[in-house]
Length: 113
Image (tube, rainbow, N blue to C red):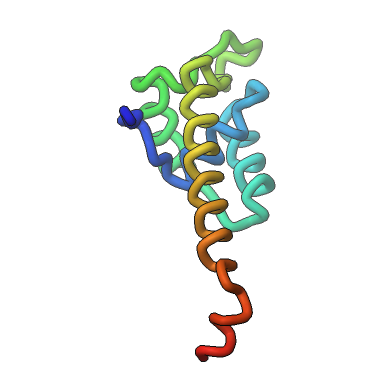
């Protein structure tokens, strides 16, 4: 199996890509990431803009024209959607495998403790 060099995504990058399913500028991205992560990921501006530069370079997001020249607007690219979906599938496989492994013989594990 050929693995995408972009995987695995960091938690921060995962939530940024997820947040950019709708076009947004920096402050909105920060708010959406915090909301999507249930408050577990809070981005500082420097972290966000470093990640944005990296994601632009990799072609996972793209910038859009903005009505306000002071605000840059970004959205996930088609490549970004594919990478996000691939990481989702990777994590789903891991979760399913973990669930089935931990629940194998369920009660016998409890008796051994």
